[in-house]
Length: 289
Image 1 (cartoon, one colour):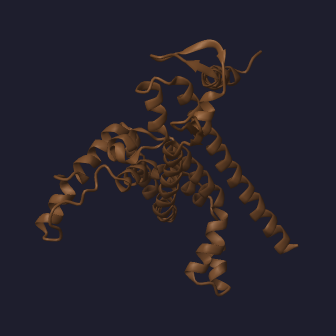
Image 2 (image 1 turned 120 degrees about the vertical axis):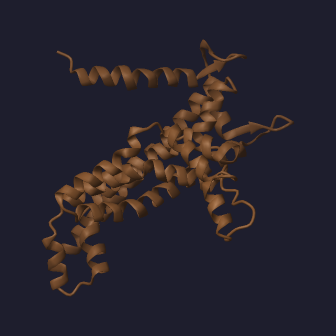
Image 3 (image 1 turned 90 degrees about the vertical axis):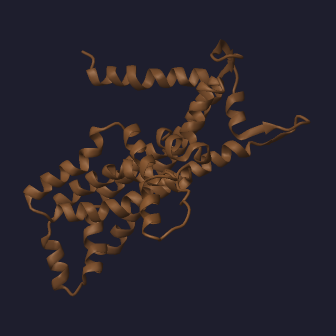
């Protein structure tokens, strides 16, 4: 008997990845599609290198800059979500059971609507003639407009808004099982509130924090709907670039190759996070040895 989960993974993950790999190694046709059976690694070369006017190979600065910007934007999004998510989860974990249930419902409300609808709501708020500009102008705090829409900052705001629940929920799950008597013991031993928070609470909920970081960084890195709506052409990210190669550029092998490069970036980030956790664990073992 075959496990249904294995069949689902094979049909929904493995098979599409194989097809994408074959496409990335194929020769593109002029108007989309690929020439099946003709294989080349030229698409992966074009992700990093370009040809100069005399045929010399030079770095593809445009694509590299977009990849670098995407990583920076994902890191900023993760940091913003953590700064908002940890205090929120801590507040929720210290409430009564009735308040926890109500706050959990509030946190999950954004999941009830499409992300496109949410971002159009943000456009209404931060547009040049939007709610935020009107409030600041009528209060006499600003003359003109902020020019916030279609910037990197607008994209980060949208990403933080969209992915903060993914940071809050795993941290809350870790804090909900926390033994608060450890905090009282730290106070009895002379620790102040910041020291107790850093040395007692944070280490105990580190698995929740790491899970939240992974749940935010990975989708933020590959996001294309939010950058497209709030950032426009000024905040092009990897997801937008891949979408353009498949739809507008009609260069399927290049888009597939960029998808695998994005996957490699995510795997490297996850591996670095895992190695960092193992290194910290070994350090703690040596401290108590």
